[in-house]
Length: 398
Image 1 (cartoon, rainbow, N blue to C red):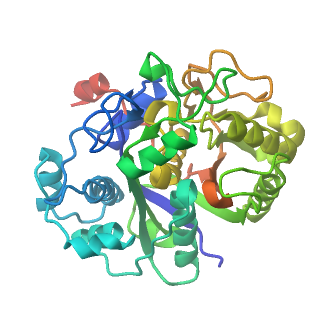
Image 2 (tube, helix red, strand yellow):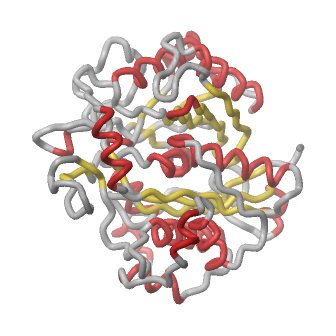
């Protein structure tokens, strides 16, 4: 349990970029990938809004979760310095059909991660949890534990999400989806005029390994995972306790497990869906748990940029937090023009902010009462990752 665990690889595919750095630059610049949803079977074109991904093909049965997950996983493994088979990567990038799984395999939730593991030749434990919007965050906590308890030396943890007509129809009937004449303005986290979230597609993957192993092979390091906490809000399948009691306990436990005090944390990547209930409850929880230190926090969410990725949201937003630590840059909360007085924290409206923070938190709050949080430390020692130079500077250096 004393093993220190670090992140050595990051991969990401979103509606605003087909790779890590393109996606991250778009988020930093406040770009939104939300548009009217068309071409989904059984859904009228234009009825709903979503941030969808173009340029990633499907397998022969039309499944895009596997290609999305594979694209992010391969980028993360390559980024970490590990070997990556080439053939399937090229097919995915060209949008051609990938090998398909038998129809009966798609009955299992664990099929996409198993297919990714097979493509990458990963032979360790294959774990898949289904915990709604907290899935990716909880998967990362499980990966951290797997390394610390000796189950694994290194782990590829990731998630992928595409728009499914049944999921979309369910959210539509629950009346939690935002609408706006201009799609890119629809999702407005922490704003007084927020009306809900928009669905998103995308994927991310992280490579986690022991610090000692990363150092031994000379790997570049993004950040250290200090610890994570899982709790449940025993209120309702979709509603949350209005007093934020469970979230407060979650944050307190996470800080204690990471051996941090509130003043140590500089940035929180919030769940920040843009729904009335979630944003107010999350704000209350953070303000109570952090006390006076809450006034010095930078807090933002990227769901207005890339949509709510549901099962993949936690790991995509954690990857974003890792890049924020690397670059000393807190991404903006897009469309935050009239901040709700109930959401009275520094939510970084409209324009991102340069700020060198050492520690950050990622929070996930999911249907079913699943709550999860992870604490990270920016890696500043030997082999620390640095912000990539702009393209014109790279050309000059060459």
